Length: 304
Image (cartoon, rainbow, N blue to C red; front, top):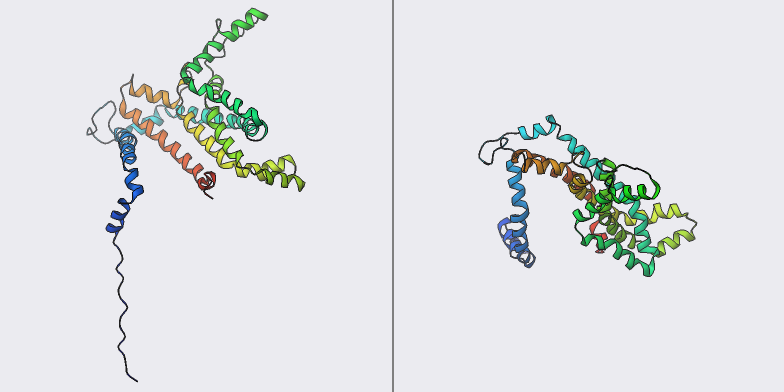
């Protein structure tokens, strides 16, 4: 037998990190997305970075190089700015809860019951969105104002009842927020309920499931992504609400957006306003991440 020298296997050179990154940057998807990415960095990330930097500068300074301090964040808790956070998040949570209770039956009717009437009902719900939010809220202000308001004046003229005013109360602010943000809760729920297969509902009914069991075991789990998206969208918008508190609350109920506006305008305290903004973004972002972890976007978008 003749011994044959074993030839070593050829070495396969692995591409380096630099070449992989360069190949990724040259891919068509990245090249097409570059203009949008640049616009996003300049118009969204850039201002947030500036606000974050201002939040660590001394109070009532307009120079980013004036020094580093955390006193702005300390003042949020020592000067009772935290009350605005409590009010804003409480009103936003109540708005989401009320809109879910109001919106789910309407969404169920739009997706399952109304048939040819679904389009006209949807149109009625969409038309107010073409009118400015301030104009719609001012209409509520005219309706509820004391004395010359439509509600008070109508009741006094017709029945001699003096109702006073319903303005400047937290409940009135909540009513305005429910009215303004209901469509943002409703339409994602309609999308979620439209994903519920009718044959599964009928099969459950044939197997003896009650209406509540069908709702709990079939409709709710399948529609949950749409419900969560509607709740999340409404919550984020409601946390930053300011018109409702100004027009209907008369600034008696402090909210986050009102404090931010005051610090950036009347008080000229940009660092403190930036700190309030950053803290609001962080708290809201944490809540958004917790909700997004429960969402299956691929399933919601029909990718699987």
